[in-house]
Amino acid sequence: MLRGLYSAASGMLTQQRRSEILSNNMANSNTPGFKADQSSLRSFPEMLIHSLESVKTPLGNGKNIAKSTQIGSLNTGVYIQDATALFKQGDIRETGRATDIALVDGNIPENGALLFSVENSNGELRYTRNGNFTQDAAGFLTTNEGYYVLDNAGNRIQIQNADFKVTSNGTIIDGNIEVAQLNIAFAENANDLIKEGNGLFGVEGADLPSAVNNPDISYTLSQGFVERSNVDVSQTMTDLMMAYRAFEANQKILQAYDRSLEKAVNEIGRLR
Image 1 (cartoon, rainbow, N blue to C red):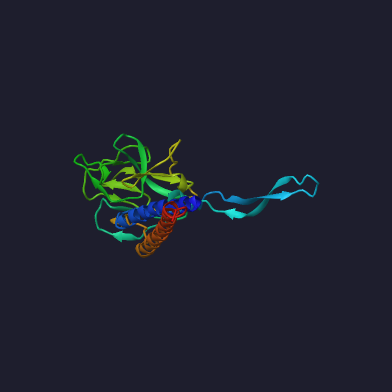
Image 2 (image 1 turned 90 degrees about the vertical axis):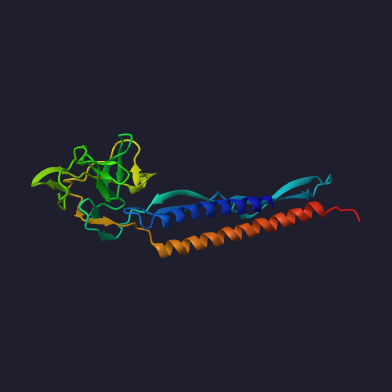
């Protein structure tokens, strides 16, 4: 009976975590460049159930010998193995703002991902798909959180004029002068990227290589546009309701076990 308690409890914890992931996706459905998280559910290793019996030998002394009979397997619970970002291209929305730049995927290898390179508040290299940029007081191109956008040489991009232009390959033209080229980093395996919040991604080990001038990768930058979140609101709401229902089902099983244990403790063996 206690195995059932553990299985139901693990199911509740798993659905609670899944609901948190889906709720976060829903809350960021209007965040530019946001990539929805996908949860991967796995079951714990199954256990083989055996019954132990005692049989007598046909010898004169009639000794008892233990005998084990295999009954079947028992699943011991479920858990969320990991949550990975879905790097599907989001819809492109026109804003008309010169500092808004949408990164549109072209020909990239399967499971790969393209991202802007930025510098976080600690001076570390990070990556993002959120092209909803702005300019600070000194004219540097930054994200709305204040992270500096970097060029293909790893430098901050400073722009003097508000009417600067960005070409389709990322070249920034400020007053008829090419001042920089936006660096677009390429992740060969998007699952290696680590979400850090505020739309930033990090990697363990070496920095991501640049996709600029890479003949095997194509992309387009569109000024005056932003990439919207790739969250499917209707599907996310459906999955959220299913997670709630699964949580309630496991809760009812837990309550049924609790009532059975209460009856066993209070009624079985009572003297009348």
